[in-house]
Length: 386
Ligand SMILES: Cc1ncc(COP(=O)(O)O)c(C=O)c1O
Image (cartoon, rainbow, N blue to C red):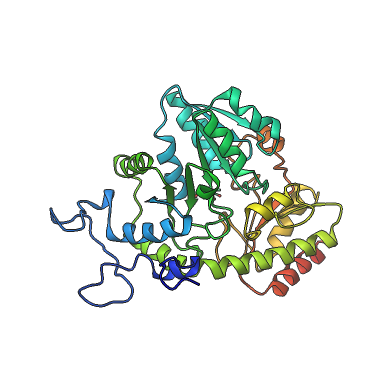
């Protein structure tokens, strides 16, 4: 232990960072700065909340620590953060994206940015030959998630970052499914790490937010520009809520992961011939990489019991503790049917080519008692005679 250094652990930084602006009252927790504008020439350099606010800055301070980044810019949602990055492209830009990405990221590229001449190629980046092919494709941006939504593929961020650097491309990692405690993409060589703060960062399903983190000043300037020029800023209140959520992120994510690992093992034992996908299960195709790259398995399990569509939907409806809802990463358990919910905007043929069948469902495991969650799953299966 070195008493002299000021490097605190993840959970200590999460509690103590970003606690400024309290000189006048001594309040331990900063207030919500519900102001649209600021008096000119104030000492903190604020002018108008579309381009900055004390609550944005406090939240950004914590996120910089959590993601080991020099710069962080917050946005109204994860999709706003994605939009801000894509908005930096030109009419001849080429994006190379992992073939399994979040449905709304796919939709933004396919339905919005394609209209402005941005081209997108998709590839299965778990395969070494496809990582090698980056050298020939020479994209401007490489876009990945790890684990991916919803197939939970684990991609080798370090080797994709090396391949990307070799052709002068920028690697963007959507870190939403892992979350900052589990993995720091910038440490593995990514240029940008983005998060939907709506998920594990906030953790309570009561606010939306997004962030883009980097170690590059030029990228940071572009993100602040996108925030104000495109009007993608969050609200001070949402920033305040998310900052509060971040204080407990580590203990929540540990519990999510512990519960998910137990449920995934239970489902594997009960259905050894079916698909139960969880990064920290030995049966996961990238299990060894997951152990190396991730501190924990996170809280999502993707399951395909091979049931027909109607039976799958009835099973989801029978669950009592898992609410059928979009989103993930909150303290309460949720279940989602990607084909009709999060990935409904992806054409069926594309969905099926990446494994998103009609019988696939995704569990976002909460922090409840794992025995209760397993009991709920058992009783829903029993009601359907399974
Ligand atoms: C991997 C991933 N990235 C980004 C988003 C978008 O985040 P938001 O809903 O905050 O816009 C989501 C939402 O589910 C997601 O799963």
